Length: 163
Image (cartoon, rainbow, N blue to C red; front, side, top):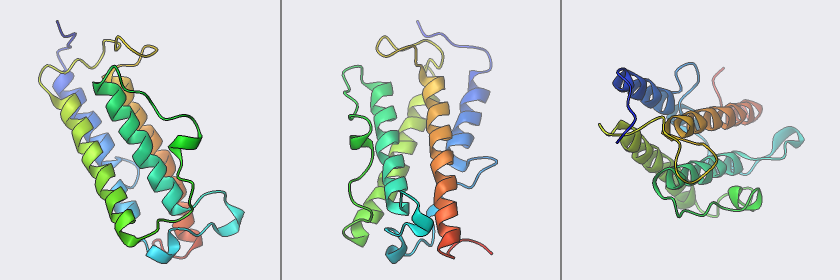
């Protein structure tokens, strides 16, 4: 039997808004809109990462969290190598578009998972170390916003963000 609370619908709505919009942070769509393809591989100021590396890392990590949350047999990538792309930039603009599309698709799928009427947010998964849907939703939101902040810094250094 699912472990539900009287205010689950409110919590699910707030988690959805946090994951989709970032609330106090810029959204994924806002941060990635207008990025120039030639900027994707740049690492200004000696930074160890590029926009491509960060956004592809968001994609891989979010995919892993989604799969872990719905499939007890899921095997996560090896940390850290398989969570980060080897290349600083995508080979083609199509690779960038696929990455952006996949982040949105996986995000939407995770939101559907937590939004189900019978979704149990609080009971730990039988697999893992105590994680549950609530903690994984917070992890997606926290991890994504952290790295989107880094993307904003890169875009500012590349003079491609705001004023």
